[in-house]
Amino acid sequence: MKQAQSMVLKSMGEVPWQEYPGHFGGALSKALVGPEHTTEGLVDFRISRYAPMAYVQVHSHAVQSQIYYVLEGEGTLTLGEEVRIMKPHDYVLVPPGLTHGISNQGLEALVFFVITTPARDSLGQEEQ
Image 1 (cartoon, helix red, strand yellow):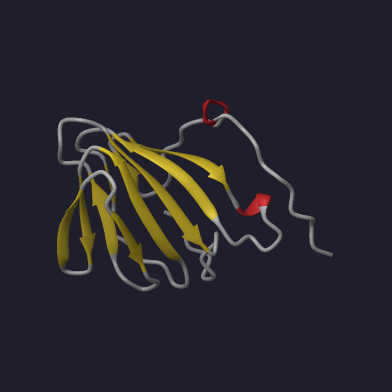
Image 2 (cartoon, rainbow, N blue to C red):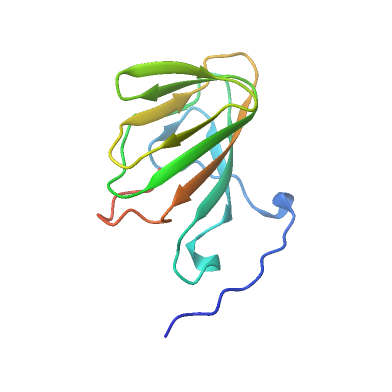
């Protein structure tokens, strides 16, 4: 039987920063809404803060799509063979199977939202 979906109302300060597998040099995220909050495990919503020189290794997902939305700083986004600079209010939709990574090559913190759907990759890989 499916668990009923419930409303989530929290202060972001209540959620701890974490450095997930494949993230390096101060690439921290707060898991704000995850699969435990929705009946179908449809969404993973995080805020990330990357210190200068921090990064997530280039990777891909079997079934997950991701959206990155930059709030502060500048990041270097790798999409397949393409490299782009992301600035505040830029966003990107990364479809399943496309290799991607983001790094902070600047001197200030890079802060961005990450929305992933579905929340888990079907092949059981570590979530990035």
